[in-house]
Length: 286
Ligand code: NDP
Image (cartoon, rainbow, N blue to C red; front, top):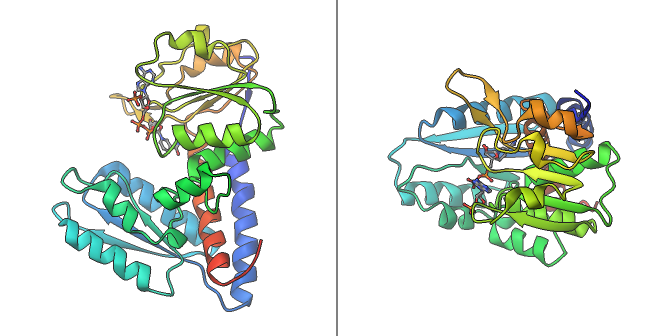
């Protein structure tokens, strides 16, 4: 293996320490950051994610409470809970764990979250601010990736960046954040005609497709920085990314592992966004 490992666990620990210090400072001013989580149904992966988020909050001193609704909860029930949390002055951040059960209209429910408490950064108002170049909150996964790139001194200005995936959660905001930092960004998706033509041009390659090991070493430019967002559970129980780590790490100069790369950063940035929301709601400037 040639590539240097980008250690998301180590960087996330650093973010945890920073957030913890901010929480302590806020508590001295009588402010206790509070994240409310909405978990609907019994999706096992969602339950694990929520538990991890609760644990991370506890570690840095952020108060958290998970509202659990049954799998068959109605739109009105979820909507009324979100409205109640919007109104509650003690709640600084609201996280609606995705995916929601199929019968619920995810987009319209996310739009009900008060943008000031939208710590995921998925509300159209916050995405619009990001697009207009005046962001308040940035989606956790792309924000965490930017922090990883910065921690490892990856130069972006003038570089070719390729993002594979165009979801609202990862691909699209990733494109914007890289563009903001003066990379030349190409976005690929399932209808891209010649995927490897694009991936092979990338100095920085971000992959978020949900397709296990789909990017192989022969699709990567020698020396590229490879960020693997994917989290896929194989039948044998192992966890793999969207990049074939073995072949990719022979070609790349730096690469994120799965697990231990982007995943811990997403949780860390959720903590960061919650504290920033608490600061803003209390009129504390950056
Ligand atoms: P989505 O399913 O919402 O989006 C997947 C994207 O990949 C789509 O834009 C799709 O294209 C594109 N795609 C699918 N197949 C191909 C292909 N063969 N070639 C090129 N593009 C393709 O997924 P998410 O963005 O939500 O998540 C992606 C992955 O990242 C998942 O594994 C998820 O578990 C993981 N994830 C990890 C996080 C972390 O913290 N590490 C956080 C969030 C997600 P099209 O639009 O044309 O359908």
